[in-house]
Image 1 (tube, helix red, strand yellow):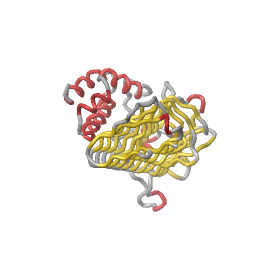
Image 2: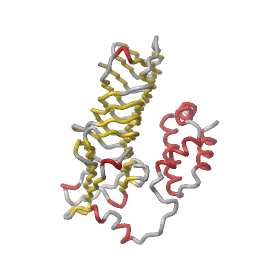
Image 3: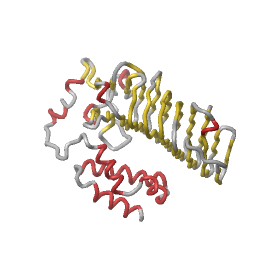
Image 4: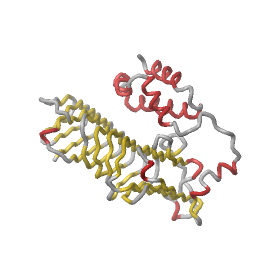
Length: 308
């Protein structure tokens, strides 16, 4: 199946979604193919178009199939109850802990800080509320993202120097137990401070920004880095996929080194796994594949995995 055939079939499977969401999903996966530059590998990773379509429809499950036409004043008041007095670019959201089952963060050019607290809270500064989305789906997915094409963010408050940097503060209850997490950063930065939670599976990715996150206990977590920097500290289980283009990925895994294995395909970059190292074009194979395994594709960047 070619890329065009795959995307055409995917389009036919998501026709139930509003046109805006169809276009958003198709644009995202078109760019995904472009970035990877390996259609065969991407198709194998994504699975069948029908399977991917179900995941896409689940992601948009909180959005009605039809949308009413709203006036500009109604759009301006979208988050009226969440506005902070004295700052037209500031919003604050609070969600009940027991209702949040999954996280889906897709954020672009912003300074994002994640901290531990007693409930789920989202606070923004210098981000246009009209292009920001923050809501809890019926399936319990806390969605925080910009509504325009990823990863762009609109800058506000240029007249006021104190408001020229878009910022987002995310509070997650300490020791929260989640099902699925997806954390995606475009050209911004995300740093976690004292956050500590667990998940059964997840995906953490960065395009051209900087993402430093720790104290996560997970099952299968996949990692992807384009031209940015991704540093993860915590625990993973099962087979985790690592895909690095021109950037840098560093994983500091808590565990017994004897219970982990890795294999890698390396372009002109470098891969390190504990005391094993592979630089330049070639493969690194493991003598015995363990239950906890890292499957690595390293292009021109650097991937370092340390288990201790």
